[in-house]
Length: 252
Ligand code: ADP
Ligand code: MG
Picture 1 (tube, protein in one colour):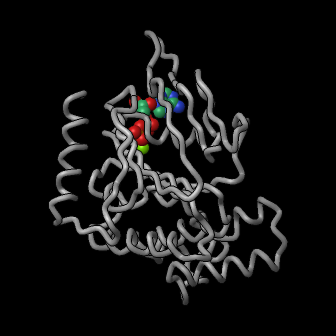
Picture 2 (cartoon, rainbow, N blue to C red):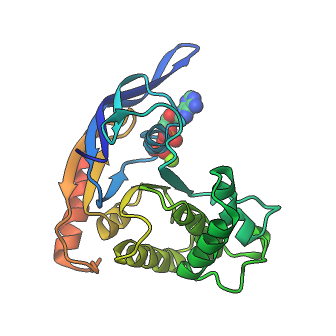
């Protein structure tokens, strides 16, 4: 049974002069242990799709099955990493990471253990007492990542997590994410990452769902068979980039 099973999923919003179709008839599965990227142009419904998987946004039609059961309300086995980091400015790094654990009722000693562990894993040692305003974008996203990892989610949802970072910072954080995901004792095995950056999807994912411009439909479900670490300059990599580009262009 797949971890996540989307069946003929559609989402629309009523508007004063009709309805806005955001997602149309998306079917896809995510197996445990997979790193899946969803790539598509801005406005094609990527963030909406992640919110649906997380159970924050209700669907209009179709089914979302998690471990074979219909998602009903917020899925506590998911954690989200946001493009905008979404940190609480009045809390320290440590307290930001602990906040969801607190809400989940994780006992104090376990909260402290996980906070320490994931601060270490994302390279935030020494910044425990810092406030978000004192941190660079890259460091803020390390906090966002540690906060999500500390939940030890079955499914990690990432919404354009590297899009607000400068290019060099994005390169190192992508590599670090892969390193963490590939650790034998990794807290997360299954990742669903959305991005509008095609190269990012190809560098990271086992499989790529290519969405059309809004309303988002699945144009292709591509297996990425390149060995890791992936070389962005290789011919195979660039052929895949071209393929995804032409899929999106043809249908837009
Ligand atoms: P993406 O993340 O791919 O850029 P989004 O999922 O954010 O796309 O949005 C897709 C479309 O749905 C956009 O046109 C957006 O304006 C619209 N949309 C998103 N959320 C809402 C909402 N709560 N109410 C009305 N329209 C929305
Ligand atoms: Mg978005």
